[in-house]
Length: 404
Image 1 (tube, helix red, strand yellow):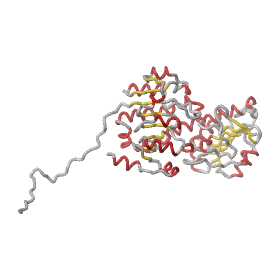
Image 2 (cartoon, rainbow, N blue to C red; image 1 turned 90 degrees about the vertical axis):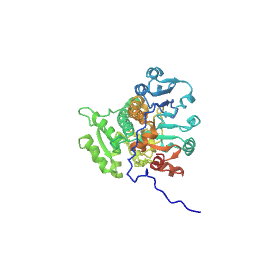
Image 3 (cartoon, rainbow, N blue to C red; image 1 turned 120 degrees about the vertical axis):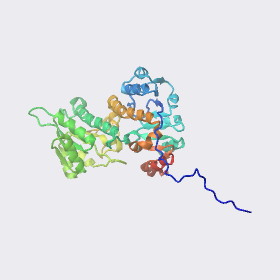
Image 4 (cartoon, helix red, strand yellow; image 1 turned 90 degrees about the horizontal axis):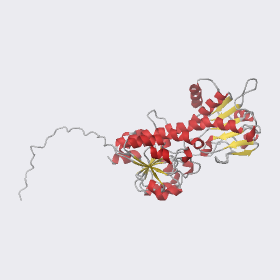
């Protein structure tokens, strides 16, 4: 049997082909659902009526659950006038392909979640449960934790805003509980002519510590700041534009300062896991009767040994004759301001998602957004959560590249 000779087609050319460029996908109109939060002490809402108005004006559809905004003093009428559709059935809100929440999905939310849904919300690592993650994985959900969303400068805008609110609120709270009407010491936070200023000790020189310091100084208090990160202490002084009393966390020095202060603020935290306990019960017992401890780090366990979780309804308790204020999620007590701060970040982000043709398209181009994704199409992409619950981890960059 004769074998045919190989032939070369004249149309076959050994020429360099043109590079195929990544073409931007056409814009996509989004269907957004905003449910009413039922999580403990959550009064915030992730999008204000003004933000909803902008999204609707750009062709997107927004569904808001009845009374979703009442914790922040936004009415259904405010949202209806902004162009949102108000619904009374929670299940109907959860039909939206994109959910925007100011609290993480809780147990009661799980039955309402849809297949292939996208959720933008915070995540509370200390309260996270394994079966929540497994349920979301089984529904092939893409989930973005907005506190990990970075801006172009590499900062975390929502975390910063919430920390600014918490830091600013701390001194307002301290002033309230130092008054005689609240069985406090009966001193004015700050001071007046001829009377030594109130003494404030702040443990932690991060954003919360910085804004607590700013407000204490503005009121005329004497402030002393502790932190083991010397760079952070330097940065605090640079940001304030003045020299203040600072120290590393040396127990004897800290104990001495706590003995004579009226206000002690705990603002230390770790990126992951529990906050370090740096003030022992013995140190607290040596404090002046009627002084106040405000442990902002209670969200992560607290940095005072005597701290115990309290609520906005019953915010304080007395231990060793010292008032303890240990309310988690302080920004929720100033819900309208906090909602506006969250909304200012999320509204432009959602607009960009719409312009880019959906979250999947935007993730390809936007590396900052990848920081916030912990579930992508049901795959767990957060190494800390995977280690905590012994669940399979998948690298997000590989997932995205494999879909192009």
